[in-house]
Image 1 (cartoon, protein in one colour):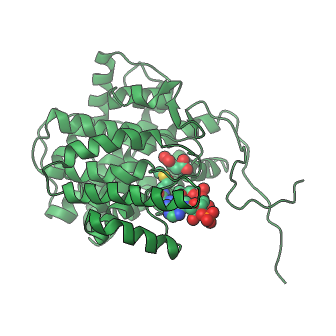
Image 2: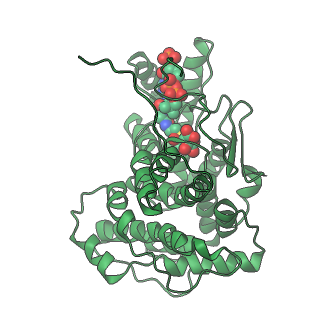
Image 3: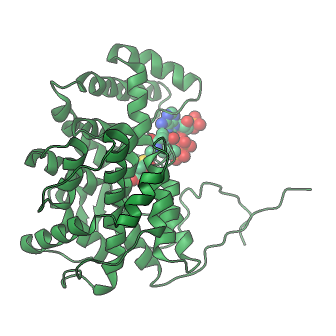
Length: 367
Ligand SMILES: CC(=O)SCCNC(=O)CCNC(=O)[C@H](O)C(C)(C)COP(=O)(O)OP(=O)(O)OC[C@H]1O[C@@H](n2cnc3c(N)ncnc32)[C@H](O)[C@@H]1OP(=O)(O)O
Ligand SMILES: O=C([O-])CC(=O)C(=O)O
């Protein structure tokens, strides 16, 4: 028995996974052996099949799966009524946490047969997270659920509903890329929380509920919303250097900077930064994007003075892309969950291949 206490479990090996590989020292990420750079150019449905089932789809199959997920991302009349009763001030993450474990997971049509049938209700549960976020957005922002034309794809449906208009192919592609980038990340806090719940032999929906709670915090998934709020508070790139110096002097964390695993640039931030520049240029978000760039530079300069390095993580530039796609910041983390839920699902099944109750030990220091 070890007596050394490690509250944050930094560097502690607690299991194996074949879903994603985070090589923090060299700034590399892959899902099932494929680099995040290659994956970011694939379709969302193809990456979902790869992450959840380790199945490679051809273009036709990916379209079929996308159509199936789009069709399953609808709420039942009862689920819709529950959402309608909730206070409109509730954060979308609280709504997901409340509803995710109780939605009906019966599929309307069978899962395409190129995926294992045992995944059917799990994938309905995952697809329904998007329906919850879409409907909650519409109720709180527009007062009514947006009627959608038939035949929209899984991601397209969300973007259409958020903007009340047909998204361009370019916007859908960008949204799919962002969702792919955040689908899985080894034993991060949210995924590990889900594995802890799974270890008690709880059902998948309970495990997803645990993951959602962990993801909501600003040190984890909630950093996406917090980073944009920070940039709005700073207001202009010229103010970034003073703001960062004062924040660091006061031990305030800069949201979207730093990472437990990456010692080099998070490869997802490397993909998101040019996307954010492109999407924000000439829009109302250009100033916000320039402020983020200035914060990153100021942060790196301040850390550099102490001979340390810090880099942007997934969360830093993601919000600028989301804003330019018509997504308000309070929905960022919930949309993160709409993608990460596929990773959580994969981990639930992987964990259950060789399960063991997770129960560490505490050193008693009370009376
Ligand atoms: C999807 C995701 O979850 S990605 C992560 C999203 N979270 C954020 O962006 C929140 C901001 N970042 C952070 O708080 C941290 O970098 C974390 C929590 C993500 C990871 O950090 P940890 O591995 O726990 O490192 P820790 O917080 O101990 O930081 C190490 C040192 O770097 C500093 N540091 C790290 N990140 C930051 C930051 N964002 N702002 C200011 N200082 C920072 C710490 O203050 C600490 O300095 P010290 O050694 O002088 O005390
Ligand atoms: O891995 C982590 O600690 C945080 C996380 O979920 C990510 O970066 O995607």
